[in-house]
Length: 397
Figure (cartoon, rainbow, N blue to C red):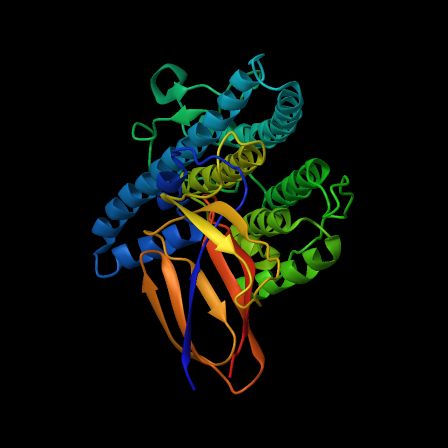
C-alpha cells in the first residue's frame, strides 16, 4: 500500500474584500463576566483582615465597574465604525445602482438594530440614573458624557465613579431581577427577529421563523445543544445560521442562576457594574451584527486572510483524447491562524504547515476512495464557520 497526502487549508471562495478592522483587538478585550468578576474578587479577598478586606473590596469593585464601562465604550466605538462606513457609502453615487440599493437597504437594517439597542439601553440608563442619585452623583463633576436618547447612533453615558461614596449602603436593588431578566429576554427576541427579517433562507427568500425561547440550561454545552436543535429546522443559509446561533448564545442567560444573584445584599457599585455589563452585551451584539451586515455587502470581511493562492480543481485520472474541465479560482487563507480540521477514518498523521493542514492517509486496496471531513475558520465576530471538504481518488493498480 502507498501513502496519499492531502493538503487542506481554510479558503474563502467569494469576492468579499478583507478590510483591516479593530474587531480582533476588541475580541481580545472581551467583556469581563460579571459573575467571573465576583469570583475574582473573592480570591483577592482571601487572607486579608476585615479592614483590609473592606478597602480592597471597594477598590476592586470600582475597578471592575470602571473596566466594564470602558469595555462597553470599546464595543460602542467598534460598532460605530461600521455605522459611519455605511452612512458614508449610501451617499456615494459613483457606485453601481444595484449595489448602492443593496447597501442602502442594509443600512436600514443597521438603523433598525441601532434603534432597538437604544431603546433597551434607555431602560438600563434609567436604572443607572436612579441608582447614582441615591449615592450622590454630581452631574458637573461625575458625568463624563451624558446619555442622549436623540443621538444617532446611540450614545450611552459614561461616569467617573471614584468621587462617589463607596460605602453607601442600599436596602434593595434598583433593578428588580425579574424585570431585568425580562428586559434582556425581550431584547434577545426582538434582536433575533430583526436578524431573521433581514436574513434569507437557502433559496434567497425572506425568512419568517419563530425565535426559540431558551431560559434554562445546565451549562454551556447544554445551551449549545438546545440552540443547535432549535435552529436546525429553520432552513437558513449556512453562514447566516451559524452567526444567528452565535448571537443567540451571546444573549442567553439561565434564569435560575441569574435570579439567584439578586438574593444577595447589593452594594451600589455591584449594581452599577451589573447594569453596565448588560449594556456591554447589547453593544457587543450591535458590533457583531454591524460587522456581519458589512461583510454581506463587501464593506468589510468577516474573515482575516493574509495570503492569496491559486487553486485548480479537476480529475485525478483521464484517458488520452478525452475532454476535461478544470476549475481555477483565487482563494485566501491565513497562515498565522490555523484552520480547524476534522477528517474521517484512515488518517495516518496530520501536520500543520504555514496555515495548511497536511493529512497523510494509507490508500486501501480498492478501485477508488473518498476522504472527507470539515475545515473551519473563525470569523472576526468569533464564530467558527465549518465547511465540508471531500476528495475522491481513483486507485490505479
